[in-house]
Image 1: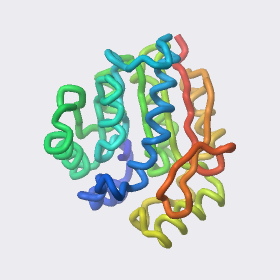
Image 2: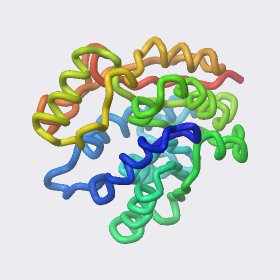
Image 3: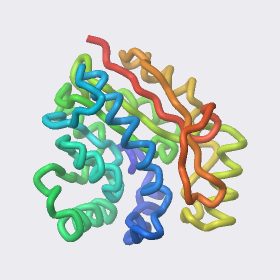
Length: 250
């Protein structure tokens, strides 16, 4: 889930998640629960950007999932009709995504392609290719000095007029307390050492990176877990998690 300049320790951490991305359906993990808000947000943003009706599907839409992890978001996006390319730098995690797709979601095999590749490398070969680029719960795991370049590569991979959608955790005490203290150390719903306060990205910082990379911000929206990470809902502010929908200028 790192960029090409992402440090080796971060990649090693996510490789240790092998077998942890997909939990049983009756006890889903945080990323699986997040899909209840992430997928509708992404779908609605792309439909709006492509001038399609709210009840339409994403048939024919090409989406890059940058930092796809174990494929939790990619699979649900594929169920909306889109064609997904998922890239990640953690080799064992990509293997888990490929295995889950083959064994548990075989009906989606023609809709998803996974690649062990950085966003920078992929963008160089696929500049302006995608209708939308999505990066969800990724940038908070990248060194703060590399986030701007990561965002720039995401923008360059999308077509002029295409959608860029990023979701992440805000840099607030509230987010740190709930996500690190609550989810990693208290409920243990997330492996310890996954999140660090100094890597969380303030919403205005991300918005600035997107605008600097040639995007117009359409809107942003906050969402939050309960303390036990068993439910995820939209919130009235951006204090915990937030989603940003931007469009690359033509």
